[in-house]
Length: 189
Image (cartoon, rainbow, N blue to C red; front, side, top):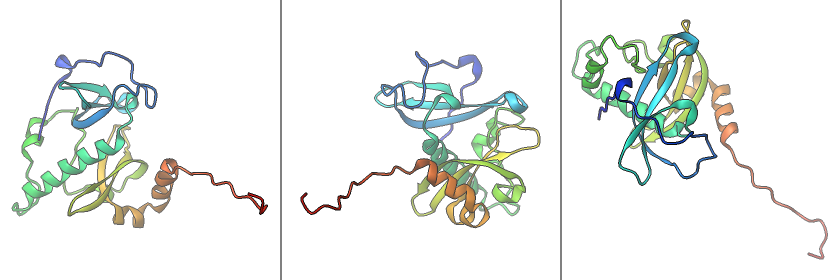
């Protein structure tokens, strides 16, 4: 499942999208990711399909509110990578969509021997979560990289709970919705 569009063919959405404000536009699915820029100017662009629409558009990640769909997309790409490399002795064979990215600085995927916590990088934050049938739950993690580029990995929930429990707690705290219940001490009510 690889859809590639380059910046020369990028179409921007018809309006400015702000999370929580443009309820008319709902992301149905994520079909691609690209990284543009270097260092602090690095930005992540997401190829999205809009609910009820037929076309897909590239939208800057900061203008979207669909991190769990991005997590699901990255998890599926990583699982495809693992599946296609299962028969390889070294486990380092490139997947077909990775071949399209060869030498491309826009590639947000850096699968290989050092992946996830094996990279020995500190976690910037957990961006999203997803569950893959038969494989369990995964978190989409953004890493602090020395060159400040955007680097995303999916890690299993169990591994994240052991390695970065405070980040997991913070992730859940940011997403929890409390319902207030009013209790009365009087017997009149």
